[in-house]
Amino acid sequence: MALSENPESGSVSEASEASETPDGPARRGRVRARRAAVMAVPATLVAGTLAVLTAEGALGVQFAISGMPFTVTATELNGTGFEQFGGLDEMAPGSPNAGDTGGQVLVVTSAIKNATLTKLCQSVDLGGTNLLITAGSGAEKVTASDLTTDSTELSGDAAFNNIEIGNDASTLTKAGVKGPIGVFSQQADTVRIANLRQTNYATTAGVFKLPGLKLRFSSTGC
Amino acid sequence: MSSRTGFRSAFRRWRADRPFWGGVLLALGGAEVLLTMKASVKVMLHAGMQGLAGYLLPTLMVLLGLLILFNPAQRLFYSITGVLVALGTWLTSNLGGFFVGLLLGVVGSCLAFGWLPDQEPRVRRRLRRDGGVAATEV
Image 1 (tube, one colour):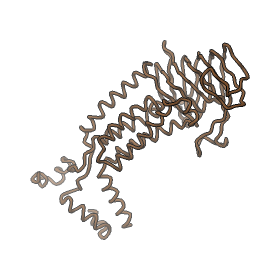
Image 2 (image 1 turned 90 degrees about the vertical axis):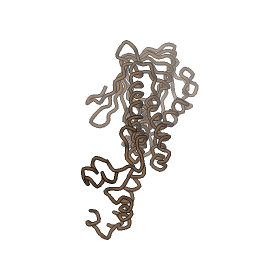
Image 3 (image 1 turned 90 degrees about the horizontal axis):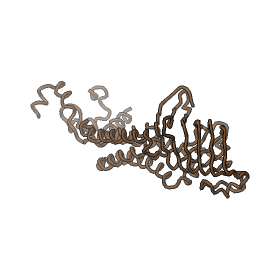
Image 4 (image 1 turned 135 degrees about the vertical axis):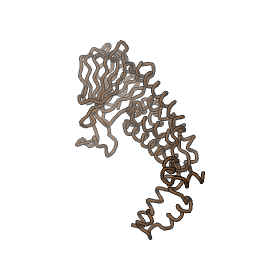
């Protein structure tokens, strides 16, 4: 029927197709459902197991987000080995989140060696809807090691133990992260922050354990 | 006009030769995971090897997706590796790019795994259309 529509165009290719298959459409590759199921079924089982283990807190997962502001709240944060210093975050070139900032944000970098968080809630504004991640609302709490966050806003009721204020950021020792030389910083042995609320641009953690994990879309943030 | 239809039919034949959607979905899944990462390299270096794995796995997904497209002969190896790597991003890269990239990668790998070249057109449809002719051939 294609021949009747435009008789002179592409006659070579159609002739070759016709020679391949004198009857009906050309033989071509296809996905066989049963063959695909051989892989799909075990893959689904593994994905389900991973999700369940993570939700139970048996499996740690890694997070690394940046260039997009997101909010983190928790009713309580307990940490050992705490450092804090100022810094400058660069977004990826041409990032749509840059706005009028020129692609740079002034941030406070907080690093905590080992942290325990109660009722963690994390939300990313995707324009109109929010991606909401909650965890640790049950008996088991969220734990994170080598947690580093770059925040523009940080609020809460904090209590520090053995705090040293006014160190040079390059001489920090408590959490294993060193800042740029000549920058004001502080560090403490332990930290306890109640009603934590952060607006972050980047966060990394060596290992995050998220018992009671829930991932959903919501019209309101944290 | 004639060159465009020629290009389109050539593309259609190229596509019929390989697990096209499988490769595309796997590569897209990897790209989506990478997009959600975007963490600055400086921060990642603090996290060390574990942080690097977070970049390595989605990059592998993109590469395997492209390899499925351009070297479909090895699609079994690529798709098995692809599904393992896609599942691994749940652990290393933001829950597999907040699950979207993981889903795309697993679906793409399964499509590539289930794909077979040189298949007869669907038997039932052919039988319905040209009735006894196909039946006598078989």
